[in-house]
Image 1 (cartoon, helix red, strand yellow):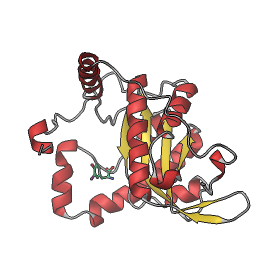
Image 2: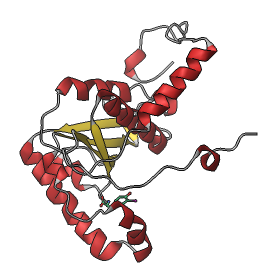
Image 3: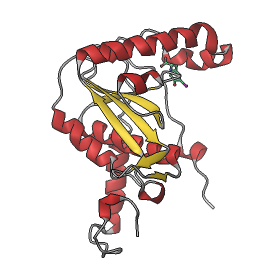
Image 4: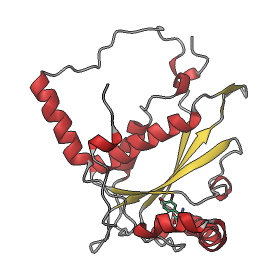
Length: 229
Ligand code: IYR
């Protein structure tokens, strides 16, 4: 029996009633359609300030929250920021770290690897985009009674949830940027998150700018990313 509160008092096992089986041709068509849609996703660094419906963000977060996780502990927290003043402070914190990164911390090899992306320490999108979603991983879960339980596979779980979130936002018609200023601890302070939570990704979400440009970079073909035995 789970020691976590969200399914207490419910039966330990229930019939799998949500799985949907499709005829094979339909499966193939669905897999093609999903690939055709997700391959259009590009990381965007120029956003408009046009507001997006909050419900889209909420539903995408609900979708992210369905991700598999270690022992189903769901060791994540999503801090959603639309307040302009807070966005300004986040930009300030991120740019401080990024200036340090680009001038001192990053070895030349790393900077060379980033050159095709055209990134630098200026992060105006942190104020322009309507939503910033800071994704935190929780080393432990603190229950309402103050007791603590350890969480497992936290980076893996958080990354899967982040993938769901990016896919859900794309599916809804929004662009995202997986931004990772490093270190990101300034987000704990600004967003009032406890020290046992680690910020993993600052996800920027909104509409791309009308004249948005993206790096002309491709993805590896199947033969390079998969082997079949
Ligand atoms: N966090 C920096 C640098 C950066 C690092 C990697 I690895 C990227 O894929 C992109 C950027 C920045 O956001 O500019």
